[in-house]
Each structure stands twice: as C-alpha cells, then as structure tokens.
Length: 250
Image 1: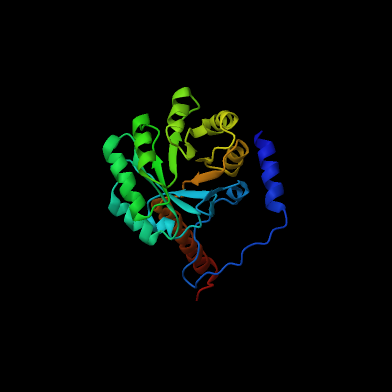
Image 2: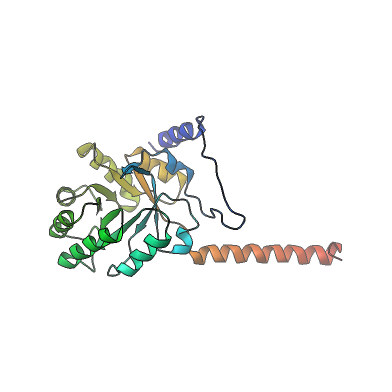
C-alpha cells in the first residue's frame, strides 16, 4: 500500500501543472517549505479557501517563514486569547485554535471557543481527551468548523465525532493510516485531516489512506539554530584548512 501511495503521488507531482508565479523579497523568503507530497491530497474547502497543509506550531518565527496553508495552534496549557490574537494578527493565514482537552473542559472551553470565533479564528480544535458534552456545547456555540481529534475508530470516537465534528483530526501516531482507513469506510464524506509522519513515504501513505489534509510538524527553532551553527563551524574549519595548507587566503 505504501509503495502504491508513493507511485500515485509521484505521478501527480510529475504531471504538467501551471505553477503559481512566486514573488519573494530580498530578505523575506520562505525558509521552510511543507513537504511537496502534501500537495497531492484533496484539501478541505473552508469558507472558500482550500487548505491542504496545517503547520502544527505556535512559534511566530516558524509560522511566518513557512508556506503552510493554515495554522494548527494546539498546546498543552489552558487556551489563552492573547496567544490566539497574536497568531491572528501576525500569522498571515487561517488559524485553528485548540480550546478543550486534558487541562480545560466544560463551560470554560465553550466560552473560549465562542470568544475565539469573535476574535476571528477559522476553526476550533477539540483534543482527543475532551468529553462528548464539551463537544456538543462548543458545536452549539460557534459557527466556524469544529475539529474533533481522535486516536482510534472506536465506538466512543465515533460518538465524539457525531457530537458535533465538522472535521475529524486523526492523531494516532504510526497507527494513523489504519485508523484513517477504518474511519473512511464509515464516514466516506467527512473531511478528515491527519498527522503525516516524519517522511515523504509516511505522508503519502496517510494521504492514500484517506486524509484530505495533513498537519505538519516543522523543525524547532533550536534544531534550525543548531544546524545553522554547525554549517558555520564546518565552513570555518574548511577555510582554516585551506589557509594553512594551501595559502588560499593570503
């Protein structure tokens, strides 16, 4: 199945396309590009805008230097409107914000969801640990899409989806493709997004399993800084070697 997914995506990527004409500044460029394989998924049309890729981050430096279609702002703390407002003001793309999970539930989640919609978010995300009552309350309170995260295709997960999901988010780690296939058989017309995994092959397998959109976890600022500094050290070492042995910098 994974090999089939790779072949199908390679055919799609190799098909003649009219690529958009890119404009970048002298200093402002897209430093982080989402994996090209994500472009082979169908996407989800949200208020007339097609979204195929979600960047899973609240780091504005990362967000403003990547080309993902939308922001998936979910973090392991009580949701804060100030964070949402910063992402809306400076993120330059639709924001989907988490409001319910292991830390926050019930009435407070419903209130945060309603306030987030008034702030201007494009979608509300409910974590896999949120209960059915919270999902029902949020779905009644907002008019933007409600994204319900699930870990499996159990009866309880289906009940949570039925409580008010407009979009399903499958976050099942390495089991994501299997969960996707099971859900797709039961819910053939439901928009489903999913984590794509760490490689091109896992992304393609997830899309082939039925994902309409992919959430992508970018490298951290720490990892990017470490990589840049290592490249600087390697360049300096090479320059010192050439100078010492060949006198190229005299």
